[in-house]
Image 1 (cartoon, rainbow, N blue to C red):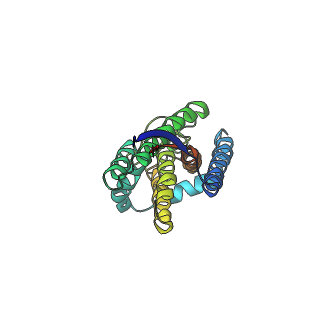
Image 2: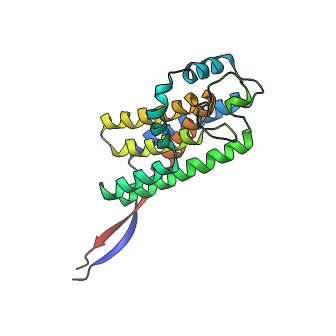
Image 3: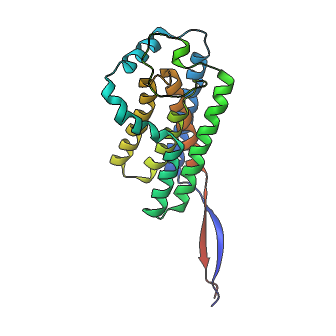
Length: 215
C-alpha cells in the first residue's frame, strides 16, 4: 500500500472560539477605552495617584522587578519559543508565540506613534526615575508582549498554571509603572492590546499533516 500525506486545517473547537473570541473583544474594548482616556492633554487624578503609589514602593523591589520586566521583552519571546520546542516538542505553539509576541510589539509601536503620549517624566518632576525607556508612552510594549504570550501559554497549560502565567504578565506591566517607564493607562492599554493579539492568534486554524493510506 502507498502512504500519502496531505495538509489540512484543524479548526478551533466551539469552546475554543468562544473563549478566545471573548478575549479579543475584551482586549479591543480595553485598548479603545484607555486610548480615548490617554489622548487627553492632562493626567487624570486617579492615574497620578496610582502611578505614585507604585513608583514610591521600596527600592529593594528594583532588582527582582527588573527580571520580571524582561518577560515583556524580545528575550521572553525567544525563551518561550525555545521552551516550547525543547521541552514540549510543540513547534506550532512556538510559531504562535513568536507571531503573537512580534505582532504585539509592532502594534504597540504603531499605537505609540498615533497617540503620542509622553512618559511619566514629561508630566511630573518629583518622581523616582529608575532604568526604564525613552520615547513615547501609550501603549506599553512590555505589557502588550507579556499579555500576548500569557494568553497563548495559558491555553496550553493546566488551569492552575494558567493563572500563574497571567499573574506574572500582570506583574511585568506593574513594574513598568514602578520604574516610571509608563503611566497606568499605558500599561492597561498594553494589556488590552496583548490580550486581543494573543486571542486572535489562538483563533487561527493550524495546519496539520495527516497520513492517508489508500487501499
